[in-house]
Image (cartoon, each protein chain N blue to C red):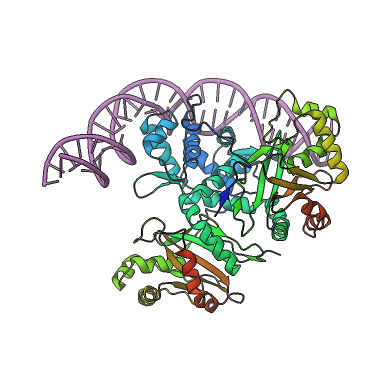
Length: 270
Length: 270
DNA sequence: ATCGAGGTTCCGTATGATGGAACGAGACGA
DNA sequence: TCGTCTCGTTCCATCATACGGAACCTCGAT
């Protein structure tokens, strides 16, 4: 059970071993230790930690002591260091109290209920989308690997395209947004040229919704519509329903669009 | 919608405003800033932050710069500081990869599905229990306020009593565990004397499960059984199903105990 | 009993943190 | 349009604090 689809929303991915950046000092190093700690869900030894941050043991030890003092790190029975409970409490409590989150949660719940698929709320950040809220279906045997705070390229996700379509109104804007990057092409169906994207954005603006038909992940499709959480004119982000293509074909979602709109424009949103 | 029951698992609760501890220095202060940041889901201004950590603006600013460098803090449109996406990503990704969590998740899902109530996995830490995993029912109009990493007094929760019953085998042990504390009594029904608790623990050992009949939160009850995630003899924690008394009476859960046991002892657990 | 692999502590040095004060930018009212 | 107020940002001389090599414990394994 709980088969996994890889990397809908992978991490920025620091170098696997040894965060080999320029030597960090002071509190920067402490924060690097914290990040390294987070990368090791089953704990990490002091030596490995020292190696990971390219510092002597005593320095790593001092940093870990500071983290322990703050409740962000603790030690399991055998001395291995793990992220502290207090750290997780902070993060979860903070997330659940975020204004965005509390605003969209009812909507996400309704949508998740209706389709039994994973739903997201995401915002645009430069060239990628950041997932701000996520709800998994209760009984889903397949779980997407997206994570709150995780990212995906904007141009091949439904949420990203919905948001881009709103802000890039002509092909020049699209071209400017692309700049001189080579757009990633995670699947065969991803759009990667300014022309294709502009055409897509035009369609999206006409339709009022955006789809990702296996453009980001094979076998996964997605329907997204804009969400106006903070302003009635400028969308703050977008809400999406992601389905496994064989279980919830796009057509199902598109046909049901009025219901989705109703939920999103519901009494809970302005 | 989304009515809330107060404080099943409240935070350790730092002083509301002004973390008035002895003056912190260096990285300790940076971590204090991080914690303060987490306490303000809708952002905090530089001045308020400086006040909260009892330091001049420039010091707070330097700390925030370090956090921004690490991706743990960012600024919204108007310069207010909020926790960074990367921070949340770290926390969520870490939690979902924790060995304990991945082991119990299937069990929690099955139980959550079956009863449509919130389920927890928690471990004992001294005099309180710490929630390590939590699953909310999809359609729950009422949400418990428990949070991953949150705590509750062990002696008035089903999970806590189940774990204490396993480790405190006679009344002297119970007395020693209590020490000279005055046990909290969140509701009228909470047990707070060594004698009462010992009797309860005997019953729990005989029955093989533990209940919390509105002892921690009015109107909320709970049934818990031990979970052996790491060792076949020493329980690593306990799994509980928390119901609203009027919706899922304890009797329902107790009557269904064989099914619960079956789920917990399922193919996924040793 | 011995060894080895960690985690922990010590302490002189110099490097980076400190915080008061001045600066800049955006918001608001006149 | 112009002041002015608020709030984030930058500067810099002083000195406290982090640095890290090496010695020290404490287990568990041989």
